[in-house]
Image (cartoon, rainbow, N blue to C red; front, side, top):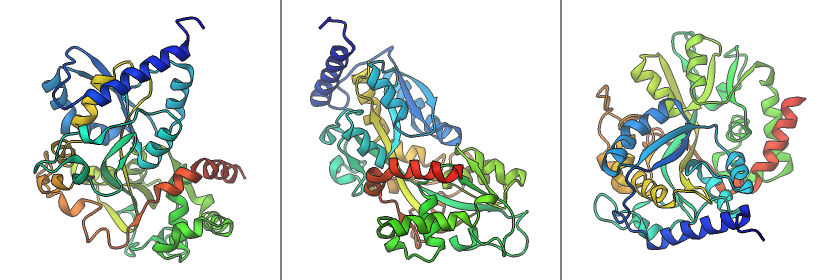
Amino acid sequence: MPSNSPMIHTVLSSLVALTSLIAYSPGQVTAQNQTITVVSFGGSYSRACEKGYHERFESETGIEINFEDYNGGLAQIRAQVDVGNVYWDVVDLNVAELVRGCDEGLLVPINIDNLSPGADGTPAVDDFVDGTITECGVTTLFFSTVFAYNDERIGDLKPTAIDDFFDLEKFPGRRGMRRVPRVNLEFALMADGVPLDEVYATLDTEEGIARAFRKLDTIKEHIIWWETGAHPPQLLADGEVVMTTAYNGRIFNAQVLEDQPFVIVWDGQVLDSSGFGIVEGTRNPEAALRFLNFATTAESMAGLARYIAYSPTRRSAMPLISTHAETGVVMRPHMPTTPENAVRALHNDWEWWSDNGEEMNERFSTWLAR
């Protein structure tokens, strides 16, 4: 086999990455004048990352971050790894994608013991909330998909529960929803009367899946589909929809930075987590790992939470959260994990989505085309 074979290149890159993971300890690597490509979800979230900890990372390490946006998923990572031309280094993924990407060999295994301890000295493995550490990545924040409305456009009757999102008689008009099955199926079942603790057991049956799609059928002709997190606030501001699903942090930023009269309905919120994985075959394994360690410290998580209302996944980061850096708004009441907001929260079952995500995507595409 020729020495310049893409397969050999990929294997060698993987060995280099794995060696760095075994040998690395925080502060050991010097990577001045390097550039890494970090891929995330854009908009106000990316800005919060930049202000919350990216700028500090670049200043302290000399490593420059090339920040790119995408809409999530593993397809682009898979394509890069398959052809042996990896140009992304670190990617922001939800926990189900971190697990599936690891199973497919798309992400580099992470040694959690090598990550920084908590702000109070607690070892990393004990500082992270249960379920936020995976073999190939660490989640850094909790976010929620909620639904929201524009208080100046809704009228005197206000929606208060997930059922109202599907009630066209009480609240006539268009709805905004992300063009994916994830969360939409859960919302549909909750609105159809399925208790929170039975949602995924219901989805685990053919009749349950059919029931979710039947509920979505009731509003299908009234839906405006969105694909990026920046779109829902714009839909509300322009009056294109009566209410829309959205990421809670995007609505929060529109509230405090743009003075938008938006209201979040927390009932039935789907609580999820996301974090970083290193792409298998990265050309910058040491710098990528150094970034991952920096991004997953309690201080970085708290820094992010000063710019957008996403909760840290480290226990020692919670006491560090104070006020919004630019407006002085107290952040705790706006966090999705605040007890008052989480009363009727559904915790995303990432294992279910890791096992069934591809099939649901196909079924959702077929449903959309009907």
